[in-house]
Amino acid sequence: MSLNKLGFLYKTLVLEHAKAPHHFVKQLPQDGQTVTLHNPTCGDTINLAAKIDHGKLTNVCFNGSGCTISQASASMMTDTLNNKTVDQARDLIAAFSTLAMGGSVSEEQEKGLQDAAVMATVAEFPTRIKCATLAWHAMGQLIKDHEQQ
Image (spheres, one colour):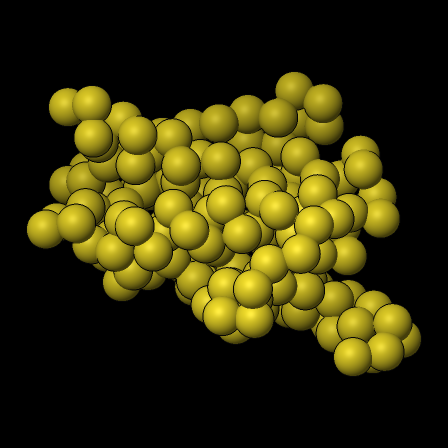
């Protein structure tokens, strides 16, 4: 895909997800795992919830506040990881982190990331990488916390 088309797609999807975030809830459900992460660099906060039942993530949702990139990325993450197994989620979290840092991933991983794959362009703006990865780190922490119970 040309850089112009990728830039347009990035802007379009980020704005779409930021204006109307998917799986954004005013109050997190109490019947699952929750985690809160904060990015002190820019003030973004993500409150994330999910159920993990029989190794599968369901009811992935979030709330919090932050910049357009962090909110859009959280929305994309919930779309991507809802109804995935924990192993699939780990793989996609790692793939997203790799893309955000400017690395490359397999075609299968890129396809699995859905809309979130366009966030690869955030690597061009190092100060925004933490914004884009906050929700994904939160999900990694949520999974880790669940496994330590």
